[in-house]
Amino acid sequence: MRLDHVSYAVDRGSFVSTVQRIGSALGAGFVDGGVHPRFGTRNFILPLAGGTYVEVVTTLDHPAADRAPFGQAVARRAEEGGGWLGWVVSVDDITPVEARLGRTAADGHRARPDGFDLRWKQIGLLELMEDPQLPYFLQWLVPAEERPSADPRTGSTIQGLAIAGDAAAIAEFLGEPADHPLDQIDVTWVDDEEPGLVSVDFATANGIVTI
Image 1 (cartoon, rainbow, N blue to C red):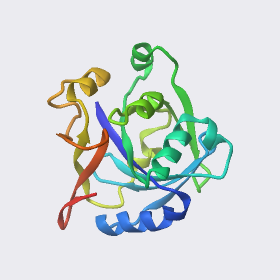
Image 2: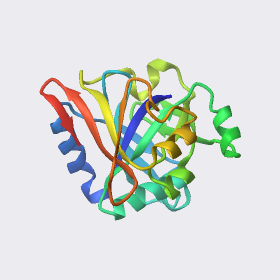
Image 3: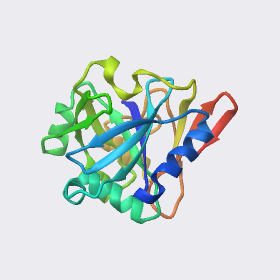
Image 4: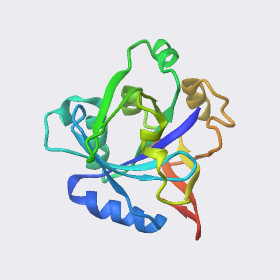
């Protein structure tokens, strides 16, 4: 399993300031990712070295935000005060995940400001909403050079994730060993009042930055 990106959700009023705050901490500027019309959300992204990226996402004033699981998840996290929404793993073929979860992946797309239609399939948002420690899965449907992580804006990388949850449950969900569920990313299991992604460690030119 490969970490694709981490997602930070906020309300519309905090969207720009959060993008600026995280960008400043990591020493690089985010870029406008565009709108997810099927989900009622929009994002800014920061492509990192190592093939991952950070997403800051908020809801739009649009009915899709109330209907789509992703829009609902973003809205709920924003209502809780904002913070890490979750972590996302990419797979080359999402079919085995569909078989394991017993349903078909949803189609996703994002209209980039340059007009390119970024497309993918995703599954696992329902599980994330029930149990925030779990990731969700996606399979990109565009060439590698068009994916959000293709053009890093910084040499910083994601070094590790701190997750409050049950290592065995996540390992079973991923189908990966509990002691190392992700390739090239350290996962630390921590105690917290609520399950979910607690913090992310970034290796930067100025040392480790934890957000």
